[in-house]
Image 1 (cartoon, rainbow, N blue to C red):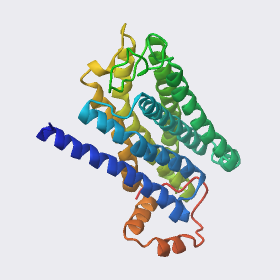
Image 2: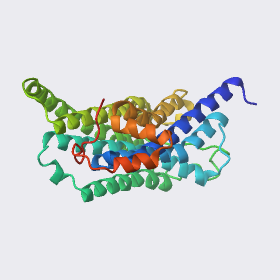
Image 3: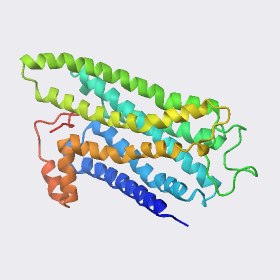
Image 4: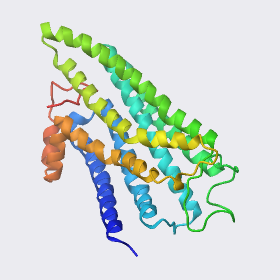
Length: 321
């Protein structure tokens, strides 16, 4: 029997799922509809939006089902697929953010060589690599049983709890997974943005006595916007990975007995709904594209956005107004 609190929780989770799906569909449509948004840097933004969209479609509804019912009626095979998708999409998100930070690092530290360094085929290779690594570190260990204490595939066999979907953990898996898919990429992103911040301060001193170029301003604003996206990701997912790592240090890790685990997990999920809001809040071109799409004026806007613009350069379309 559902209580009032359960119903309210269901409404909140449903709204979060709808916001995640709708917001990230809007991001993809905005990039398709606006020529000003079609650049190499935004290929990574679209990849991140697709990741968040898949999370909203293939993971969050089933996470909400588990959260509300504490039972799994869909069988062990689909349970392991759902858990693998969850791990894969989280990994794809952070690796895409790492690629974004490298892109911004090259744009700020080597502005004259950026156009020759960041080519379409290199961006394509980077995105394929992100998804290949994400699949390898998620589906392979879970489907092979490398994450369990006894080395068997989780949720299968006579010892598996009936109508339950549990993510089993062992210490080597937790420490290896969290290190390779979160902490090391996080440290790399922090290093790149510290270097970017150092260069930005040096440039700010020169800007005081000289009028900055439009290209330099766009690069700076693009970096600020994407730094906000990465900062939001860290704030949302760091509590989860801290708790995940602490669990891994225990003799028999079991997330189901930790009451705080669903809270930090859904905090991480909320990041997927936050990104489209950040783009609209910090970027005039995204904000304009959102407005036209929501007013169902896409054909007119698409035709107008295709007109030549002398102020647009590859990789430099994110600005803050």
